[in-house]
Length: 265
Image (cartoon, rainbow, N blue to C red; front, top):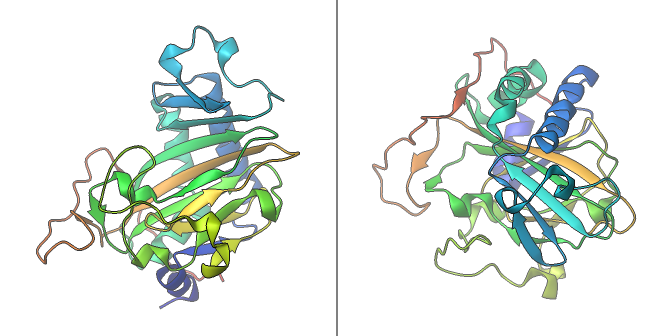
């Protein structure tokens, strides 16, 4: 087992400095820009504790403006950038990592999400991406990147090992069996990963890893998450009985087969 795969399986999170070459980073940033220029139905903004969806915005002028403080904007799966996205996820900088952590030449791209946090935006609450899908398994990975320098205190935070624990209630209203623990009340009790992040870095984490985003006091943070699945993914809950069926991959984009699986660490 490669060191990268071992760390991903054990901790549910890995930081990969300088993982993206300049050309790949440029394509990714272009996708981020195009998504904000052409928002789809999955876009929303949180401003002063009020959530607004794109369909309720009267004009593009109501979308995020550079320098607007206290704003958190996100969009999930904008199809208007699909062609550009497919050109990104087949690049070797992406596929070599995904194939290595899955230890397989079979992998699928399942979607992307863009984020914008302007200055003076509060922290994002702790949550798991797996809470909103009916699937479980080892091969569920998110690649998170930032297009700005992000200091440690304002970046992504992930609780190491939490991907092997319970699946908690979703922050979007999908109820499992128990609410997310009050982590902020007892941070010292958890093994929290956090790091300074630069453009070109990747943070790789499991769908089941509890994570959140730090507050942005005096800087803005433009970021994007790419989600992938591998062969070891099944439909149902994590504690499902044996015999669960392989996840339905309709709508997922297969990554090209690579002839080599190399270690990134």
